[in-house]
Image (cartoon, rainbow over all chains, first blue to last red; front, top):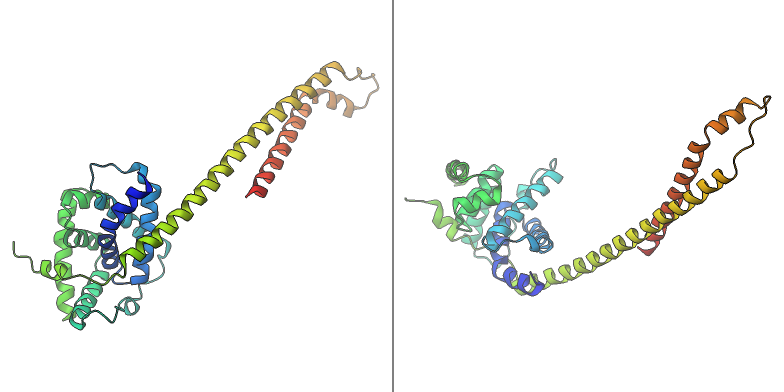
Length: 161
Length: 119
């Protein structure tokens, strides 16, 4: 893949990737931005292995998920600073900000696999097969994960209210 | 299916900052990465070249050393020769091999040293 083509694809998908990572990181913006750049650089280095029959987005999300898991392994003993993960730009409307904050907080408390499945399903509108591909699982397991994730998320959001 | 979570995620549109600036930053990093990769490739090429040089040097020195030992055999130890001389004679092929290995290792070490300087 030429650098120009790669940048072109990134321009189309970078928002999706950054939003996915922001949700996955429980609203930690600096971390999400760093991981997004790391993901894109890894993708660039591995672009020769990209198979066109998969969506570029699915492939990126797979790399992003692994990058996030690697980050968690590297910082296994550093708890997520929940109070510091929430700052949002002042330009966002207060109610949106509040909703996002509550969602971030709830997502941050979901187990990683459930969080990933929920984020990919709702934010990226990926199919079970695509989520399975991204997380190295199978569609049946993803279906169960999603179901559990939804339940957990509902409970957590209710507790937030 | 009535999914109450969908509207929540549909309205999830956090501000992410300027997309163009983000892509430009990525392009700068890609350029830096390309340069680093080029340097690493160059380094690898250099290392391979020196490896060949080290191997060739080892082979030549080994052949010379072997030829020399075959052409100049040690005088047969006198009956009263010390035990040490006897042991040395018995171990001669092993000592030659050790010397060759040492010379090869030295050449390889010097080669990697040069590679590091090029870094």
